Length: 215
Image (cartoon, rainbow, N blue to C red; front, top):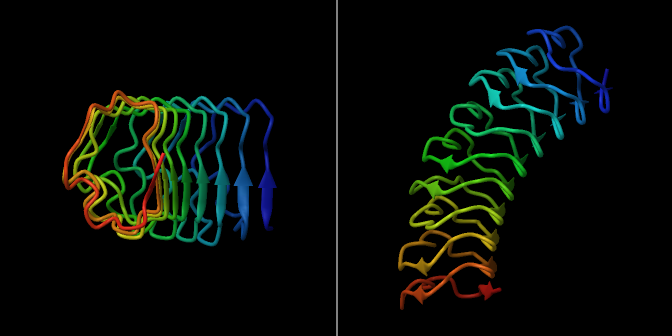
């Protein structure tokens, strides 16, 4: 079987191993349900699955091993849930290329949140409640969306993001940009910082970023 679509139902819980014998080659659509939590090994037995859509549910927490065994997963959408923390969730998910965590209540990004993901091409964290981000927090990638949060500083957060092209930081609480804030992101082409209380830009803040366009 290639695809299972359970979207727009009233599911509140899934037993561990629910999809174990299905062996999906494409994905599972569970968007627009009422899922409140996912247990460990919920999706075990589907190492070739490429997409998982959990958009528009009521998930407030995810167990660290909830996505165990999804070795080929590339697209994961958790947009519009109630997540507050995601540490330890994305372990051994080296193939994930598009991760959508927009419209949640995440408050902090640590330097271990994405440390097992080698590269996330598109990472969406728009419209959360992120206040703080550790140095070396983000993996390598191309497009990062961090707009509409409560971020005050991004010092050293992108040191591993050497291929980053687009970075959205508009509508946050950034009051100054330091010399090392964008260190490592030398390929940055588009940097959006509008609608922040920005008062100071350090003299070498954009050193090494030769082709960036500021918005």
